[in-house]
Length: 194
Image (cartoon, rainbow, N blue to C red):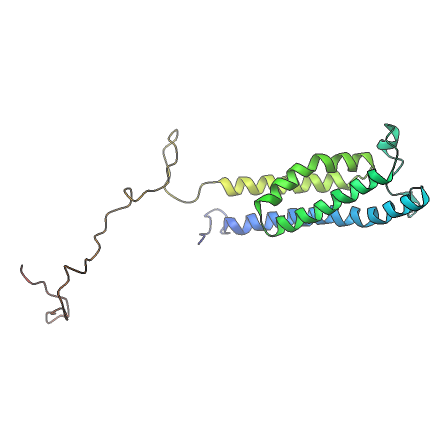
């Protein structure tokens, strides 16, 4: 069970889940937004050996890859489709708040950046930056200490153990008298001398 934080009144896990879900939306936007045209572009390039144009602009060609001597090819486009499919999977993992989603999102970022920059897709790095910022902020929220006992500065935070809990005696079955407990005129249980 979570308790509201004193500064915002919101539950920390709820904020964490919200940031993670926004990161999933960023991931899906990149995966489906670039992946859908990439599937058709790969098919078009494989059949016609020309870069498909969307609204008169080349979809995945004539960018920095071409200037570096990496010409558009079916394997290059298929690799980008694979990256976009991995982004869709990563979005599902992030949405369901799986730790593998965060690791995959951060590990996939360099490959995504290479394709986004190589194909001159300016929105891609912005989505990647937003997703990374959301995931980094989520991790900071998740690692902040709870409202538990505060330790003096310089001392490690120790989890409470059974010994550090205040002693509360537990009633023993053997020590309780059999049958109903006698009560005084006020209705309080009376003690019997032993």
